[in-house]
Length: 182
Image (tube, rainbow, N blue to C red):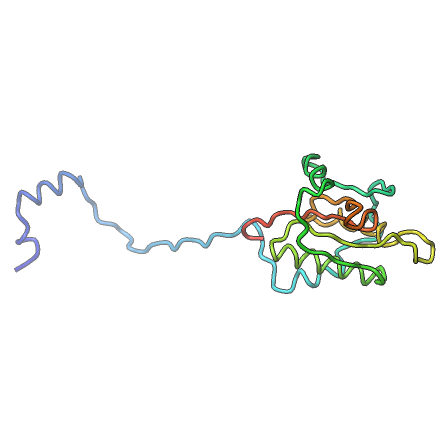
């Protein structure tokens, strides 16, 4: 007994009425869906580690610097810098650069920022010292940090820490929040 003979003629009529006229398909092949291409290229594992060594240029122009240092990325609200200066963000980690050369400090700062962002930390402190023991008696690392930090896309703002937390010998650095896919 065929399948068509089991179908009630009334059901067949209702079905054809609902579906409408049907024509056979000429080609039964189906085109596969093309894979979606991400607009943001994926970085290979280890890429950040390779880049951090060269992530900062000493030739970049530093923002105006006095005793107190401050910087906010263009397009970021000034209220964020005010909140950072007042200690409105809790400092989750600290890096002490005392005794390091400029090259050592460059590598440590790059590693530190990458590590803290990976841990989803937002506000960190970098202690650079006041430069009293440098050959020129000037704050070498403070000047370099003022050049280096604006070069990193993940740094939103930074400023001199309050006196109880290092004062002009330390910086509070606010890191950009991680977005999904970063």
